[in-house]
Length: 290
Image (cartoon, rainbow, N blue to C red; front, side, top):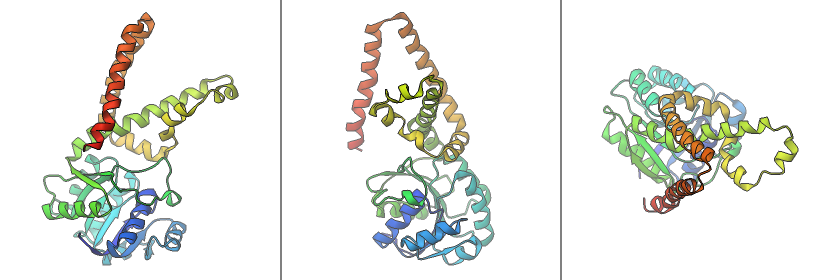
């Protein structure tokens, strides 16, 4: 296992805070340093024992760090690349963003082809956010997608792979472009559709009556709709080309199902539902075997 003297984490929310917790618990670094624009968050993180030290001024704090994890919203990552390039361009860096093509491209443009940046994305999280949402063992047995590009150094890929695996995660390596295409199906499109489904609740003339008819099925289906709108708006826009492509495919499937409904063809509808159910039933077994 690769050990670090000092790991810095920018953004002490659900992912960043849970990372700090696990790094401290597993002894992956001698010291964990936190960065945030909110002094209150840093104070709370230090009180909780998540970090040993913190800095509001990023340029001052980064100078004595071996490895940096950027766990901020997508829109803030470019700014940190610019500051890293100015102060400490040789530092080993990864991120946790849900889109990768945009981030990896910006890293190459700003930090250069010879940089020590490796993109990564832990497939772990919650509909909750902020330091209050941190979880123990958040990354245990979860997949982390590592997204090297053609310029990424092999030794850095191995370091980032080892880092995530030391947190109990399983790692896979794919291109940034493939990551965004796959996540559009498995994450971004479902979130987008759930937000649209929730919008239908506003059309009810009798909200109390409607609420009395909501069961666990609806609540389970729409749980991810409690996630941060700011976070997901950024993800949708950053990966909009893939999202729009699959929305178009979804529209075609929806149109076909609407046609079956209009025709009242219960045999064809049942056949379709069985085919969809089979896909879902197979998922559990397939995921267990990965």
